[in-house]
Length: 487
Image 1 (spheres, helix red, strand yellow):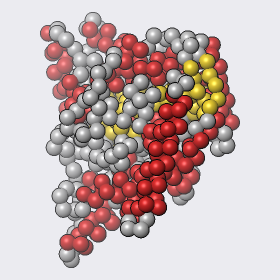
Image 2 (image 1 turned 90 degrees about the vertical axis):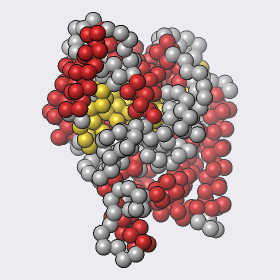
Image 3 (image 1 turned 180 degrees about the horizontal axis):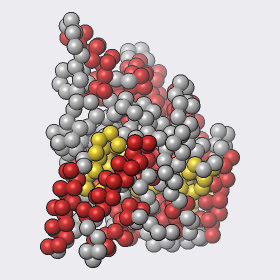
Image 4 (image 1 turned 90 degrees about the horizontal axis):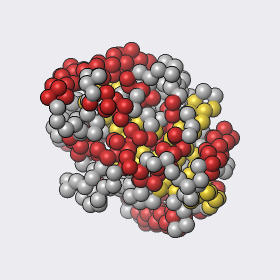
């Protein structure tokens, strides 16, 4: 199979650029042309940088001709989820509230990409303020799954996942609060990595739930994921939750050797509610890992059943606090014809926020209100601690935990739009990882009715190297990651 430029790995393209067999202008032109060809049907982008991207490509090509050291992501066109600030470009969070807001600074993760000389080609669509699991909550337009345009791409980073799956960019950044990188990666048949909480700076990411939000890469393969993580990880003094740790070379972890790796499979992740096709795909993946020398055993994570309830109380409470700053006074859209200040707040928020955002603000405000704080918010925090302890106990005996990323493949657009509780349960397998603050990666492991299935590999805090090693070994002995949607 002949791969187009945008389907080739970061390393392959880097070698061609170094040998000057290829120019950055060619790469960027192919990306922009592809966006023009297919994005009208997919809706992965909210804005495209166009001429600015071409100018940046010309600048990098001059540097290429002059020689000298190049960044890890030199010349690669990429998309950034539209909740990360990008200087001089709109950052809307897919909300009418910020439809007129232009960023006045860059998020640290974006600055890190710039240091490694990537090329921004556009801001990707998302669920409004990252609240949703299908990308139908964007206030501009939904995103469609490149594998079948009648289906959702997952959310809230659905635009980033769809852009990578459709071959519009080499990689994209997403944010993961309860599964918003991993679930769309699973639905779109690509690789999505949620790093350990605090490994990648959140400075410049518009906050949804501050104790859960984490930026991470969406890529075509595991090796590309290691490249992007290497570029964006690291301590940031501007983020009080940023971890001060020495970074390993994540690319060196990709040895292909997982002999003796101890794998735990939680029975709660393979039980009721998981589609038979998904269960079969995960069992086949476990058989593949066994062939490569890993050993696996069934375990229990007993507090998994409480994760969704705890998560939606905690995340909604933090959202209600974080979104209080959107009042129509300081930035964003301001309501017309308000009678007084309180009326301005009420009208601006009523007009600016969509129904899902309002639902979560109301739930969070209720949970934090006098008389309910201890019964709901405080109890949810205690459950979070129990969930983290479940993981700690398993990791005393095992190196990684493996299971499905999502209980089913992607569902049809509109199918769950009127049933928020069913929608929330789509994240039942990703939420516990977020509550515990540990890393996890989703890699393609099968297909069902023409739609991808994702395998989730979960690791110990700050042990991204091991989950990357396991994911890469699995990927090298299967060909699911090579499948491409026929747009």
